[in-house]
Length: 313
Image 1: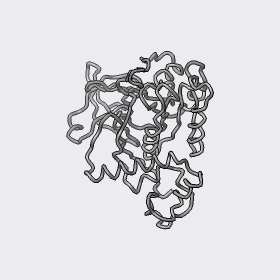
Image 2: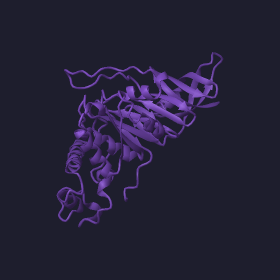
Image 3: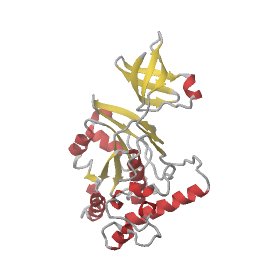
Image 4: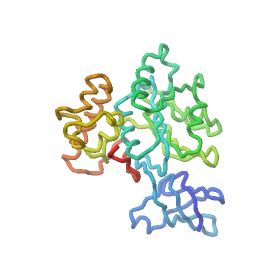
């Protein structure tokens, strides 16, 4: 038996990196019976045949899991959005932050194509809003090479994933950092106002022994699937530490009187736009729950968490 990690999965074949190199594998049928589907990032145990082909015998427990796109055992996420072309969808960014917080991932926001924002007016607004919340925001440009060294430094010593809106330049950023990969890229469709999905499947790449990352297909939307109404507030981290609402932990910061979060919004201590984003997601969760928790997926990311953050923080 050999231990390894799945680095690529295509059409039922899994490519497992181990001490012997990369071995093409199929999954043992018993895994399907156990409702276990191997995905990239999985640590697995395989057996090999005389033809140097492999069989995945066991999938080790996952600490985190992105179900769409399927990636396991990620430590950090680089949420990538462009300041222009396409224009940033901050509501979409907030949704991805919610899921990343739920999984307990380290979050870095990459604001790309900042060279297109000549007076940095839009850039400054976005940076100020998310930096005030407490997130690390890095401005990058593949044209000028701005802060590519910082991104590479952030990647060191962990398994990370680049995820974000279609056409924001994830693959271009990776090519700038690791030119030998030469990932496929595409221009923005000006007719549609968004990018093409040049990354067709998620794949792991290794810079060194301790630095692994995944490039993933872009997305334009995704549904809220795995968050309860009274849970959402814990993933808007600016709500914590404000004091006690009249209704304590039962307050969902919507219609309740004497709510410290609503008071903070009125006093400009919390971004009104972020709060409105929270209310919009809250309403979607309520609507979703009213029709039952079906596993509905469209063009997006559905996240399961093995390490939920402490909801009492």
